[in-house]
Length: 453
Ligand SMILES: *Cc1c(COP(=O)(O)O)cnc(C)c1O
Image (cartoon, rainbow, N blue to C red; front, side, top):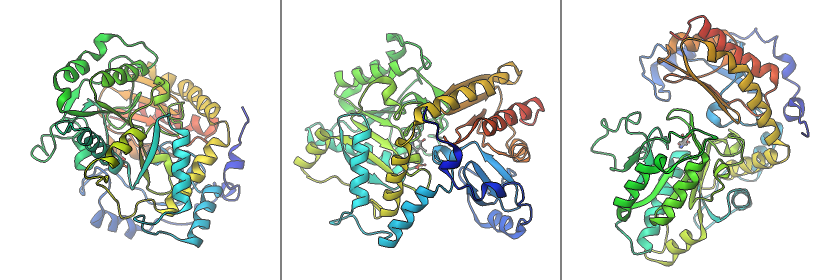
């Protein structure tokens, strides 16, 4: 591969300070005020899971307020694919900041948004030609769902307002997105009267790399056959189910599901918010299945982890039908739509990704993860170990003890954030083998020492 070294990708300057920054001290009032006033994602205000204050981040390292440095195994939840504090991305934001931070998108447009949308159309599967910019992944899913419903309305099929999704699926936390998330982990009973009732089919049992038989899609075809008149779209995360269980399933399932959708006049929405931009080994996970969805959501690593931004792409057929039929407009318009700072850093991030042989790098990470996590297969408490692209997962037989395990990882000098029974890695693509080995060795050590129990 055209080897791009970690050094060329991020600042050398502060890397050499890595080991001599034990001087600053943790401000105890920061964590106390945090505990008193601040909600964290999916958390209790009375949680005994520790929270750590970060002072800065650079490359694959997070520096805590007390000076400790952690190797980042999470890319801040799939986002920071190029690592932190990247000079080219910083530069893109600074340059845009000097021109304008934001301007409304109703009736106005600007180069960062137009260039980004053009680039997205160019790199995503063919047929996707129109881009709707949104603020976050969940919102892009809401938009995708509304597009599907408006499309069928325009096609004189107003009864098609429901969705099918896969169990173990995750599509976001807003009310519409929640209605297509796994009903158990999404706590549908808690929100019973609030969530739209949609259709769920079992999560695919054919794993990645395996073929897929008709029996694997039996439930999906039964629901489509019986209820397609009321179904606008099938929504799924192609190949990798993320937050709903970190499962990798057969690309053939995605391809065959697409064929079924066509047969029954149901759109396919590909939620690539987690998988987009190379994480699964392809630029978009749909490419494993060689399909082009009708609607696609991207987010997370779209800006290289710099700012919140997402996009919903659709075919020209969908945007044309919606525009040519009453009410002649698409009924959505975020205040911060197309934020210029976010668009310019997204464009810079995509250009950076395409500027080097990222496939070879993700492949190498896949190899290091497979080798590094292999010993976990021989540990009693481990149920499964799986790796795909730059994603490595260790599934335990029981739920982890979060307070103890989280502290143990930080003590080991790594940032790994488990959930449920899962300990997983999705490092920035700039990581090198020694740093990745520290992450995998930390996982083996904590499990061997029972720190997960
Ligand atoms: C994270 C995620 C979302 C939600 O994105 P937010 O930016 O958190 O709103 C939706 N779908 C998938 C597959 C995700 O991984």
